[in-house]
Image (cartoon, rainbow, N blue to C red; front, side):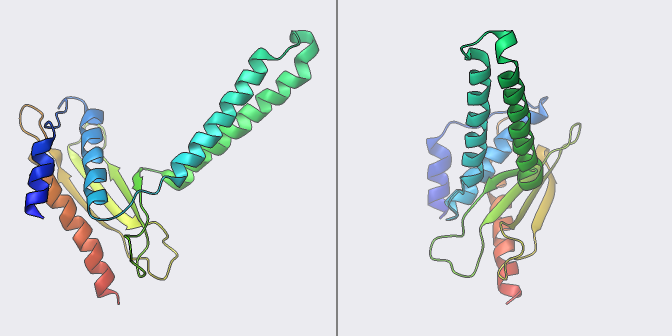
Length: 192
């Protein structure tokens, strides 16, 4: 496993962030978390992304119909009102999905292959503005399931994972995230 990690780290260019931009730091950390979780055997669940893309496509089609409808303004007034209402409704649905289901989630996964006693994961992260404290939370994708386990989390300073030049020290971050995934797996074993 150590050799595999070394190969992954050596085959890629080092990840570099602008240390003055917390969005850049969070993006690199979230991207690394996604890679680590996938490497631990959790396949990504893209259903929510596909639903959002479908709704976004519907919104664009509605806007195109409203823009390029054959008749000029006074004649197509009712059609335009209908398009505006549909546009608002579908945008509201999209925002509701993001607010209720996704929240701060960076990754949804299916259960690991050949696993019958666990659910998928929801990986959530937070890096508040003007703070160096990065919080990573691993929770069950289906919290009402019998096999759902309590969420685990850590909050650590991002300064321990980046050099002064803004390069991510992937080995340290990899270890911390793997420890959190293992802690979640231990919670699974403890509760049985």
